Length: 366
Image (cartoon, rainbow, N blue to C red; front, side):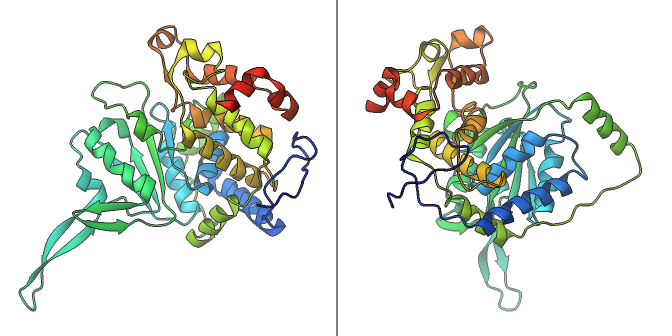
């Protein structure tokens, strides 16, 4: 790694802070920015509002992550995902998770096939719906843990194992799982280990009055809107590689670590609000996803570098499904987002303030 010293507008790193060498060409930034504008233009033909949801989905996609979407029925979660896949010219499959769904129903299975010419019989692998670029796992908390776990290998290793044979999945591969927050009867909550595989937990909220007015006007008319492909699978893979070339200063890595490490109750220097409300904090994967997401957000915003605002903007989707609240906090109506807000407020973003703060010196030294 080079020790060249760089400074970027909008980044509050002190002069002389070390950063990774910038390997992102201006054409790559323009290409990703133009792709984002075209994607938004196409999605707006079908989707009304939900700008933040779409932004976070795109950040996750270009970071090679997966998303967990939570929202009440009727907020167009499925429509957003299917339209995004169509806009990106990717294959799409939707899996409706039910209590009787088995692992082989999503991964695929070996079947016996007879050769009519010779009369011999051989095993042939029949691919399941996971063998698509974009997979929507609808109501993932309605299926038993055994089937939920079948997604773990696919999401992490981008392959499935049937018998003793490993089968590679399509690339790019993007899993979006939905949860309904209001119907909990007959559900199987996702274990923390599986939630940790998702880069973001995205809240899909109710539309504003004007947005809902437009939804009602469009969906009750006879006009049908079609979207056009913007990118190809190969172009998406290239852009995913470009995201990893975005430079991040050492100070911003420390800032990301400070934000995440404060969520751990047994961490020296953890704030009182964490000790009172959190039973279990976030692991190292949260830091990795926070930095990767910040890189993608910077490029999508037309910038060749990351700043503190990128990290702060993505802290909630990265952390909200990785924090286990204590029983007392839950009974008092405390939410993960409210705790994250407090952590963000008490963490200085400027380099000199962060390094000279005694509490963070304890956190960094542990």
